[in-house]
Length: 271
Image (cartoon, rainbow, N blue to C red):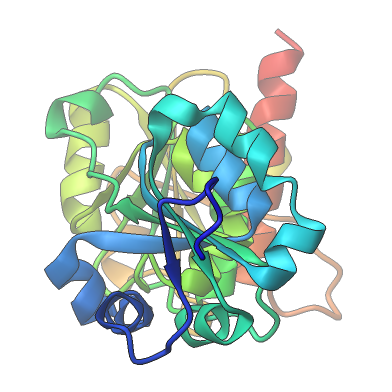
């Protein structure tokens, strides 16, 4: 018999709901269904803290033992949809993680921020062709921690809703607006609003600590292997480099973005 605390119980991996949720590992399915899957209590609580609504909460047999999910249900009751008890095998089928954390949730795909918003933000990270989901998630997490107000995802970027990206953000993705559109469009918005545009390059730019990041600014971070496009190294954009020992050619994209965000936050704290 289904536990009275649950709305439903699923034990078979052949269940149609299980198949549908498992398919969300694929980007095309996420776009088609307009849904994503959150894994683990931390991500779920971060989404709920950001006032997101969950369509379905799934708790496995293992999850009942290790996750205080009734506390989640009590605290966020108005934001929860169907609560489902599932077998461990079912959660393993649905989950993208090698070791599922015992609880996951389905929610609607977060919407992109409107064009009008971007001209009002005083700090944005714009990512060009970033193709590693872990790096993208780390950048979002670091950017939010340092007070960045928006994430702009240019052409060629990995899907921001990739399960590895969402996990790497540790929930920060629910606390910042983002947009998927060309970097050119973002730069045009930035320049029209009077914001400075800083393009991170490995060598030859203004030393990072000599920039003035106290006023509105956008930071452009390039692809892990090839950096930013050459077109953005010309014109009215400011090339910025992180001073490094000559034994190092470049930094990981996530590390470079984190350092830039920290420098911006440091300057603004000192005002």
